[in-house]
Length: 459
Length: 42
Image 1 (cartoon, chains in turn yellow, green):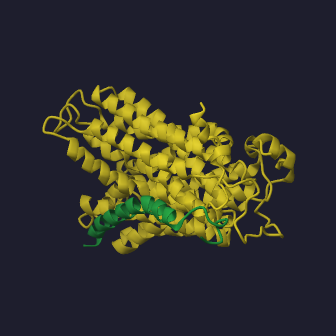
Image 2 (cartoon, helix red, strand yellow):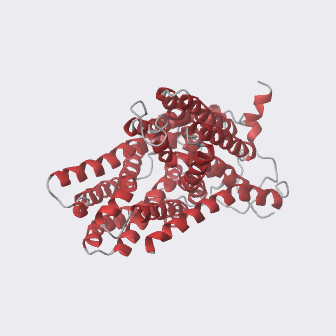
Image 3 (cartoon, chains in turn red, cyan):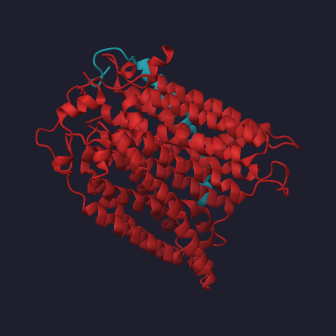
């Protein structure tokens, strides 16, 4: 236990002279790894041919069964972030990031074993459950640490970390495909070996983040930073205890805001390739659709930094107003762009939509910080991530089922997404109303200063 | 090194190494994706 004490919160506090600009790379070490989850689908096809090698054999795993690996991981991400949020806040970032690395890397290693003995439940347990816990811990801890280091620019700082989560798939997808090709032979699909390499590499990469991350000392402020003497109406200087936040309408309104924004975006993202090919038959092929999805990924990533940074200047509430108003207009116009055969405007419209999808993820921690203070923002953020879990199911289901219903009703493929787009626009109206209802948290929910010290154990 | 640090401690080399460690893989990923995305407009 003595050696592990270096992981304690007290041992993670920065010494004088530590630059806060070391913390964003530490956060990126984690998010660039756990964001690999977005690229997990590259394993689905090879894992469906582990026995048949060139084509699926009767005993091979079905794609529908393999799809559950990602779904379990994302569900456990939300669940573990919600349940373990307080442990994360009180244990500090180093212990959490270290644990996250063990779970995420270990999840890959156990999955490798599951692949080698061809037992899918072991892969569910490995990547889905253990990897999912690593995802949940790794997602919230760096974000709350950055908010504490950048009280002057909370949006920009969290935008940097969450940008890494959005960009990770761009590294993971080609890397995984390359590794599979290296380890594959005419009689073997090299998925297990790829999992082993990825598990070890990701664990090491994340350990670097755990090693360099630091917490600011109590009472620390950036040099030259003067907290506003006239507090803004929607930015509190007090803290709300983690479970008390659940009793406020603000938490649930922000939950709806995030859920609606993510549902709309994730629905499009999950079907972007098929949608572009069906709306522009003959002009967009499978290969060019891959380029379209890649472009969306870049805007998704860049939007996380751009919109979260912008929110530091225009406020979180106004930023979400832009998402909902501009998103509504674009979702309503996309069917028109498709009908007019205007591919450039179609692509541009979705790129802006996806930038706001990413921006919604990246701006929400700062929104929570404004509402509930910095002390428990990580734990509160963890509980809010359940909105993502719900949206992750709701968005793709809405797009898939409505498209199928349209096709069954005799609507041509090129127009099968129109109603979906209008429904997505409607979801954004719900988000707009929830955002408009957000007011400052009532003073009775705030912690007394002495309570903060008792809970935190700060001398 | 700047008004964000408290007078020494973290060196510029450490900052460059830390940012390079995460920045290089990220730029590699973005570059590859952009090259792939250009197919859309060819």
